[in-house]
Image (cartoon, rainbow, N blue to C red; front, side, top):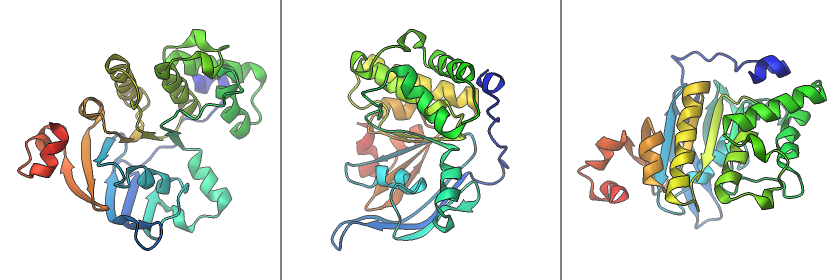
Length: 259
């Protein structure tokens, strides 16, 4: 286990009776005429995979970027692990961010670094007391978790799109986050690779008991990974439920996502 090899602490226990994420009255605009989020209310429970759907430009990615302070909300309350992130200074916010993994749409790998160096980077930054041997053990463990142990010495340019996604996910997992935010994890991938990534998301949830928000347009991914789905429309949550319930919704607009 990574934790035994590196002395990284197990994820901090969260009271399962309290939502891990609570958002109330979240507003975000870019200029006077570009209101993106118009009062989003949302809760996410510990261990839940929540899928967020919506048309392009509906604010899905902005929503999860607000959760980690990459985008500052105009107004509203964002509580993560019971703490309102809007009240935190930079050091306090960084302490929260270490507990949250973010898989960016483009995987965000450093092109000038090998896979080993890409994965070691967050460990060296946040776990400075680890020895070289402990870092190496964690890197190999993370690659094993995504099925790519032989890619350790490759450069990102040598990887396929699906492999880059897996390596990005391995780097996200290496700090044992309690929450993972996935921004379009299957975009640009073929059907078979997309399913493999979706199955990996599900396996990570089951193995690590992570709480996840998955932003996607891929309904196959949504169906496989989502315990609950919400749909953004006009900057608010317009519909909520499991895949089967929303697919049979009386609302024609909601059903249009499932066609």
